[in-house]
Amino acid sequence: MNMPKIPQDYQPINDKNMDDKHTPLVVPASGPLTTDTPIATAVATAPILAQNHEFTVINALTPQPTRKSFISRVYSILWLQLLVTSIFIGCCNQIQPLQKFMMSSIGITLMWISMISLVVLTCSLYCLRKSLMTCPCSGIYLLIFTGTSTYMLGAVGIVYKLSTLLLAGLSTLGIFSGLSLYAVQTKYDYTDKGGYLLAALLGFIIFGFFISFTHYHVSSIIYSSVGSLIFSFYIVYDTQLIVGGENRQIMFHKDEYVLAAVSLYLDIINLFLYLLDILNGRN
Image 1 (cartoon, one colour):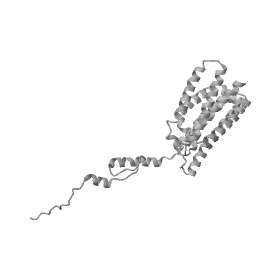
Image 2 (cartoon, rainbow, N blue to C red; image 1 turned 120 degrees about the vertical axis):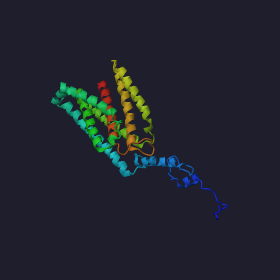
Image 3 (cartoon, rainbow, N blue to C red; image 1 turned 30 degrees about the vertical axis):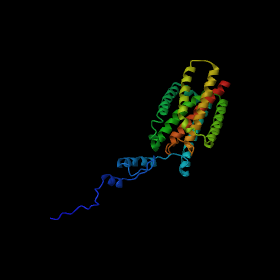
Image 4 (cartoon, rainbow, N blue to C red; image 1 turned 90 degrees about the vertical axis):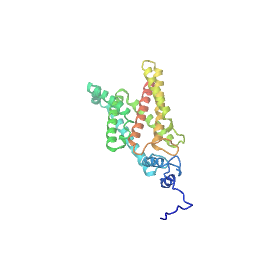
């Protein structure tokens, strides 16, 4: 029986060569894959790339319609919040029956409920980050947050005079406008300074706790001045997160317009309150 002979130039098939031939070449963010890259590495890289394509941040490469739509949404929500808050503060300053209701037992109880709700909502702002990117949850959160904070700020309209409120409001508007223009125009990046701002804010809170046991007039003015300075930096920080750009390392996601608006709203309200304290101390 004649058996087929093996050719002299025959070479056995290498399993590694077959694997390399059929390895899908996916280019990760760290660099191109070579033929020596295992299949598991290349396949594991594909979901990461898919996630990166789905994640859109507002930067210099973002299309202009997307970028303008995000910024217009944020500032539309912000100005609506400020308008509602300003009108309610003015009503509390001028309408006597509303003042009597807020100083009654029911009004004070609602004030405590609003205070606790505002603390919970502020703490859960970043815990509910993904939920705030969906339409129903974001609208409900925004409505409750604006309502509780506006009701609490109504006490400001009762305590301070109308002239002091107007002067503090105009000062806040001027400072906010100037800082916003600076944040947009400057090439210096403040978005990577969030850790320093958080450390300064925590130190400021601890300082306020200790200063509450003193009764020095100068210390109160210094405390309010430091608070105004910290939240002025926060306005620049959050504005750069919203506007984005080629010189910014950290930016908001295109669906985080509620988170962006609430962050900037808190900065403006805190700046307004500390300016009120400074002006009231001057008088």
